[in-house]
Image (cartoon, rainbow, N blue to C red):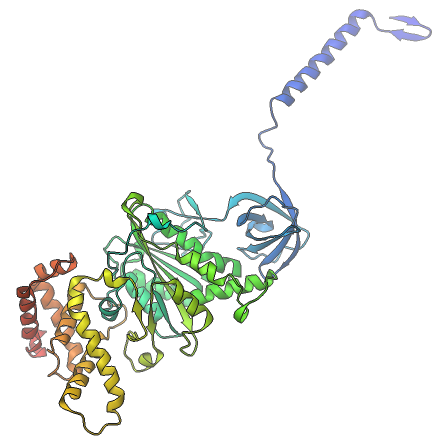
Length: 523
């Protein structure tokens, strides 16, 4: 090595070699940088919790968040961005974790709030997020659908033409429902609203119709009782039970009916007929009121927010019958609403009455008298289903409604009258028997031919000479005989064919034979 002025100098060959080695290192680093970032790195947007209380969180720093986007909180708790403001975001939590505190980090997921859908959900009990609640295995489905979807366009809908049989005589004959219709079930607490809906689900056994029971803020014991009833009736395999209890966060209670509707729409869009029961929407309205007040939105009538009508209308508008070009499926809705002190003119009930296509009113007075199901014929109406009603029902329904209406008017007057003319006495006699025939045991829906047999018997006056107590005992033998001996007529009725005069004569003659036979012999 040479030295100059006390300093060592590297030979040119070694300097050149060192420079080339350094250059190779730079090239390799540059090539690695150009090849892209490591695959284990992910870009995420994060924000900070500024306030959390009552199932509501305020988050800053996520200015690009979309409406109803899922956000991920500590502890894998998810939330939905509901209130987007220039300063922060109001998020409704779908879970509860006391460890979540102000100052912690929140991440965007980039997903709009969704729920699992598919055949794997049939026969299961789960919540809106897809969490299994029946103790069984996890769901084997990777298909998800947004909880919020637009309702079908008007041109994509078809008229309601096919009847939805409930198996309940008073409803199928006097308040008929069609597939694709929205029929409100309204009444006070403990008047049998859920029983009517559950009986309708049970009556779909073997029809191929998919049923969804959506419990909103219900007690766990009440939901378990419904599940056991559906299982015992053999209809749980074609039913999905979507549950949120009163102890769940209000955000989960609010989103549950939308998630259940998305599950139903998956089947409807594949051409199937679907029935969904919302039990009940007053709990849904209260959950939304709680969320809105916590989000500092201005209260309106009865402290409900101004858009309470909109949230229910956009939910129920998703129920419809589709045209053949869109699969020809249908989604029928039976929303339930609870009134207080028979006040059907309260804020939320009147909103839902105006949204739906009719209502079935259950009277606490009739319930206390034991007239079950406690359907008040005068206050109940179906604005669509009459067009879908089977022709055989139309033959008996007109006389039935007239006889019952005349009877109700005379019954009150007869309490104060000492003597009545023969015409009034006959009207009361017939009306009492009509009311007895319309009585029906819980969870025992009847087939179409069985209903027609009982209704035709009372409209023809075949029960007029019998004591009222004898009518219930005659129902079973009448139903058994008509199913055995009138199979051809039963098929005509179910296929919406009009019966000829000879068919009706044969029908009535058989009924007379059964009714005039002593009860002991019919068994």
